Amino acid sequence: MTENPLAHEQADALRQAMMLATPGLSRFDPLPRLISHDDFSTGYCGWSQLVGNYENTLDTMLPGYAQHSSPMLSTLGHWDAGSHGAMSGSYALKIATRPKRGAQNVVIKRLTFRKPVPIRFEAYVTYKPEATELKLGDQDLRSFGFLFDLQHGDTHPDPERVMPHFRFLNAHGGERRECWQFKNGRTEFVEIGNESKTRSHYHLADEGWLPLPGGNQRLCYNEIATKVNWTYLCFDFDLSTMQPLKFQCNDRVFDMTEVDSIRMPAMHNLWNMLNFAFFVETDTDKRAFLYVDSVCISGGL
Amino acid sequence: MLPESHTAVIARNETWRGQSASEGYEAGWAREAVFFVRALKPSIGPVCPAEVEISPDGIHWIAEGTSFDLPRRQGDIAVARISHFGNWLRVRADMVEGAEATVLITLHLKA
Image (cartoon, rainbow over all chains, first blue to last red; front, side, top):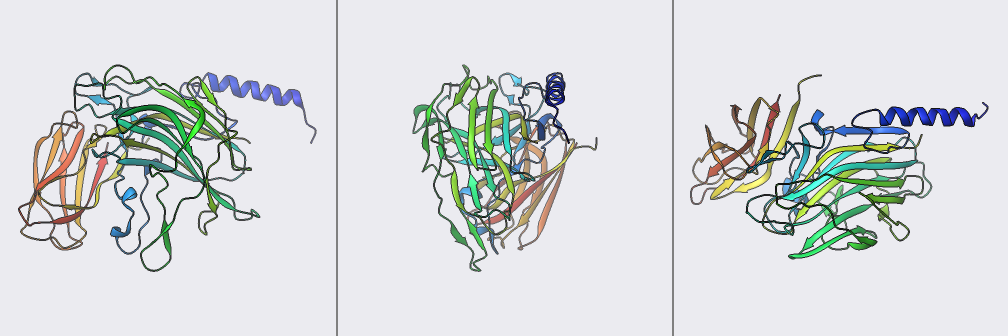
């Protein structure tokens, strides 16, 4: 078949024009293949709580996972101003921690990939502490972020499980931090139960985070705990090289040259895994919330 | 489009003693809700009543009017059916001294 550059250009222009004319999609910059486009005014869209591994009894679940709970569909209802609503439509996905310093919660969407291509993960999110006090509360939330959980296909010659992690460290121990961090290296696995069949690792522990080069950023928190503004996130990752390509938050694009991921040998039951997760963590004995308006996951053809 | 339906795990393997409550859950999109409470372990002490609570903001809570006994034997379940709850829902129990229950609480919602 003969390559026709003009036909490719026209097809790309048509695709771009259709994208820009589609409400809900025009706010994203997706790669050609839309893998999923989730607007939480239409439901949960396959985002569920990250449940920990266990064997024979739930008592074997690591404490980090035991604290996780189900996400909600929320209109961002506040005691002083009523429902804030989402960026579009009424509902956003809400991830809530428990009211205990250091508590975390995680939501996850679980897919597999059919082609090791570059992928793009875009989302509009906002974060707030629970408005239990008539105070600004801008240092009550410790962090929010996202991670991928990936594994090569089963014919890869040197298969790995690869987990890029990024968090916006808002505050820690009552101190304002306002910087992006990432994780690399390995995490420790522990045996779950006594049959040597199940293992677990809590990769979101507060330890092991590294500063993202040039990653200081001040986000729009607004002036009280019940006013929210939506923030754009975009992360590009190449499934063929298992390397990050680009991370963007609003108008800032961060260099990925020195960034790597948590890596470990492939596991026997996770081939082609393509998981995406959001998480949030509180820095005080007050619930912290991460709201997600919409997510667009796309990839190369 | 089929009506939205969702199962949320509100409390998993939580051991309740003294004044206990599940985390609140927002379900303003749902017209009906069913709580199931399953005993994951045999309860300790006397039978304890639990009640459903609703809230205007997820911070201040008030009894919805539905109450039930927490299940006693491992594997037993209790149920509560709710409608007209606004947005916020949770289950609360004031366990008497020495009483203990390890529960799995699920919330089943339908638009």
